View 1 (cartoon, rainbow, N blue to C red):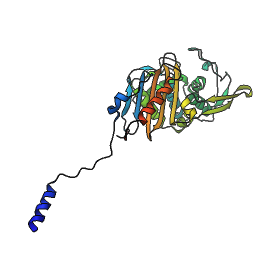
View 2 (view 1 turned 180 degrees about the vertical axis):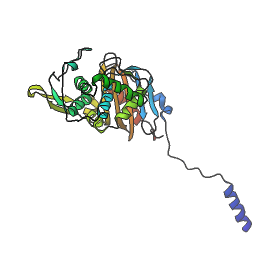
View 3 (view 1 turned 90 degrees about the vertical axis):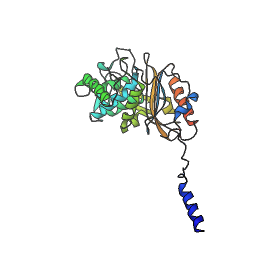
Length: 286
């Protein structure tokens, strides 16, 4: 009997160690055949937990970024720690002489720095964005220099800024660089709050009430869990959208650049969400 027990013990010890089946981990490289066809010419979907690019299309292509610029404007303004309740006045310097765009903030309108930032981020108000730069120590040119130095500090080596609004087509970047900018901007509570506010009423000149809405319809519709949002458009840049959003319980950065129609960027975002949620298993696990 002792010999039998000894033999059985030796046999058990000789067996390879038991391998427990791990929870399946999927990476989207395995699902590229099912990836959606998107109209945006440059796309990046980034898993913020792992840094993995779940979807990319021309992610290193440099292109004008329009009002996505305003995320950098907001960060530079907040870094300066200027009083948010200081009143700023729209002047002739805020008039767009490059694209001749209009604004409901008439020359002479005075609002707090906080409200100007809200309008710049939520509704992409160009005059609000420009006046923030003009009241910066050293003025607009010093502000733009700081935008570029912050871009370098964030590792945005293929990005350059020439103005604080995005109306200048020379403001350009890549989807890869913008993902870095979105992640950095998400660290600012006011940028998260203001860029995802759905609407705001403000009193302009002569007591006239102005009603503003978020420029991203996905924020207004309320069906997404969005932590940060910014839209952009000029003709040279096409329709652009960046978001920090939660899909399938996972946090993503979504960058969509140069879409070809007014609703194309939001349709692209919806298609990405549908595609990801259709993948089996833990497709975002790293």
